[in-house]
Image 1: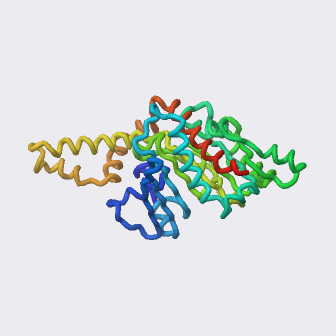
Image 2: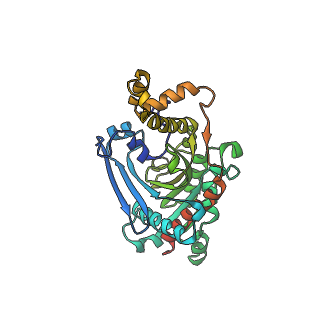
Image 3: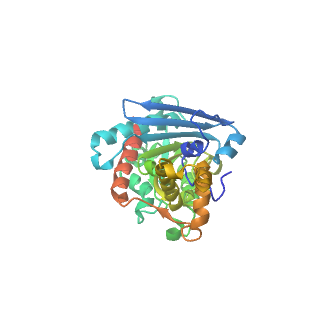
Length: 323
């Protein structure tokens, strides 16, 4: 299991990368990677199939799909790029739904939950997605004279400091009332690499723990608690300060390695021999307690949140437009 000195990340693909070598096999974990040339994205699918694999990865058993936008730059982000990423998201989301055929989607009742705090930009992904969502449940209720619930309903539970209640408690209450066939939770995540900030989308069929991204663990929103499949969609918007220092250390080591005076330097050779986890542990120990709980977000997070939330909403709307 991950201890407090390990690189903090919510991405299954980054947990896998902690093990040296792209071809390293992890017991109880299946990994599939593909570059989608059509849409210019890299897909990594991680499936944890055993309790041993779950313990090694530090994540529940289930399927995790990571969509990485290669060379993403939101400043050049146009409607075509948004649609491309949205289509990939829609395709992978469909595969996680409890249906086999596209025609069956129209019979589903779906509850989309926008987790996070709309007043704190790095945490506002969920509420922003809900703002761009095509909500349809009320239309079906009118057409069917309040018959079987269908279509999309949505909610923004906020955070405990605003409501005094756990997000999971609020979602459970709504789910008991409207009885959805599937719940989709959207939330901001934490990354273990700056290159994945605001450019990576993760889908998982394991549900979600609100606040886990910054180590603030709450009651889980998952199938065990709700009784229906829960799909989590997340985008990393923050990174631990120690991780940035650790990444910088890697670059410094590369530069120093090219200097002839450093060859044979015992202290430098020891530092160079450290793996990622060991370097991160060293940084955390040196920086404690000043930045023990410091998470960093890009200065242009407001723009990237807006664009990525529109992408996620577009993908969800695309899947259920058949209904």
